[in-house]
Length: 160
Ligand SMILES: CC(C)(COP(=O)(O)OP(=O)(O)OC[C@H]1O[C@@H](n2cnc3c(N)ncnc32)[C@H](O)[C@@H]1OP(=O)(O)O)[C@@H](O)C(=O)NCCC(=O)NCCS
Image (cartoon, rainbow, N blue to C red; front, side, top):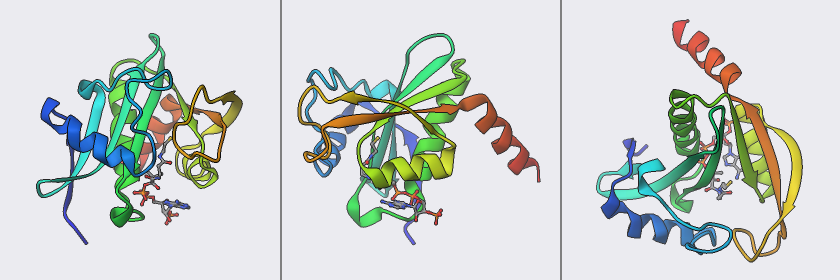
């Protein structure tokens, strides 16, 4: 089991993050689907010097956050790294006042993962503007979660 640390991304991490995004066809940046990757809103999972996962977010309004891009290197999946990367960005959004979080996802297994582990509910769909992510899926499923509730559950679990 590798010793993985989750940290805030640095400017010099961007090229390695872009390489990681290529695994899941999410590297079209800048594009209409993803105009920019601002490293200040990204986290990285490191195995030693190697970046093996990343997750990002954006603050949309005083109370709403949006996740942006998440990938774990295929060799490092199902080790709990995705859960840690997601929890880290949720906490960051909560610290900035977000009470609800919106996420667009395409792969059915990822949508199931978000629902199962973070209490997301489907609120709609959105056609992709161009190829991004799974090339065989042409729309995003828009999911929403209650960040205040998630945080309360986390704090309760930590207290026990
Ligand atoms: C979604 C993703 C980031 C999850 O990362 P991960 O590190 O593999 O996930 P974790 O190991 O933290 O997940 C732990 C749990 O989710 C389950 N899980 C993880 N990936 C899964 C998958 N692809 N299908 C079904 N279940 C999955 C694990 O079995 C585990 O479940 P358990 O706690 O009930 O045992 C990763 O699969 C990925 O990079 N997917 C492709 C890109 C993508 O869809 N990104 C999201 C963009 S919105």
